[in-house]
Image (tube, rainbow, N blue to C red):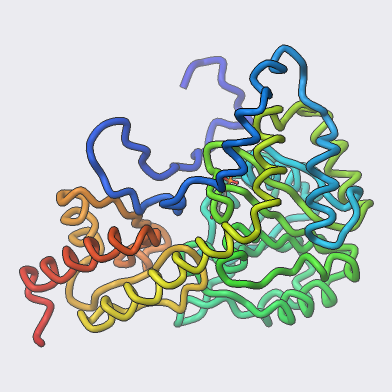
Length: 360
Ligand SMILES: *Cc1c(COP(=O)(O)O)cnc(C)c1O
């Protein structure tokens, strides 16, 4: 730390992203990226001359993409604010709605950026423990009297709350904002977006990184009541009015037109999720009921660190978390192609056999 670093941030611990190896031949199952490229329409849109217009600033309002997303969700463009990835959209939401007096609650097992953003902005937060099955208990958030952030399906576990629970939480806490981070919702086939028309305190965050296979493009959006969205736009335009670049705006619109492509590939991913889960269960692994594009699993006889290290040694990257401590033995494994998941399952079998955890 230099002697110039603001004292305000002296105790900040930044978020640690999953490894993005620059070299080596890894099967990358550690950051929930898709194993497939975005739809062909995305490449076509990018080949149609956007590079020649990079001399110009992008449309700061993202008008074309917002109206496309509004049609897709049966909403109005005034209900949508674009972001440079949902990490940014979440940062704008924290800045807009949370402060020293109006803190935030979220589960203790969830996306690790939430406590980092709270610390960055000096927002008091508390972490509500998930239950013994690692599930979020909706009752814990009903009438919370604080702002609420929930990933649904939840990060790390993939467990989903029914949208009726989201509605109960929003209805029980009308003076605070309920944020639903739907990074994985397409894989679960659920969304709280329609509820935003009825509940003016509900805001849903969606990203292109996971289910639109465009993590490199950095694109996200929030959907909510037009007053909430107007506040978010005030923050966005005070921070970076050109937050979404013109290449990404084009790509994002093309992806929305490719419904069939995405539906087909979401099915490939959920099929691979189901098959790999079944195989891991026969090896003695315990799994959460993940509705996302990843598995969350542990083996009763092999420590998480051992699984992680041995997979990495064999060229397969996964993710493990030290905190909270009770998930330290769990691995989060992105669902890749069927072939990648077979390689993973084969390695798991070998690891479990040699670590003495398999008595079949
Ligand atoms: C991946 C992820 C994000 C971040 O997505 P970007 O749009 O790439 O910034 C946000 N929330 C959750 C729960 C995620 O898993």
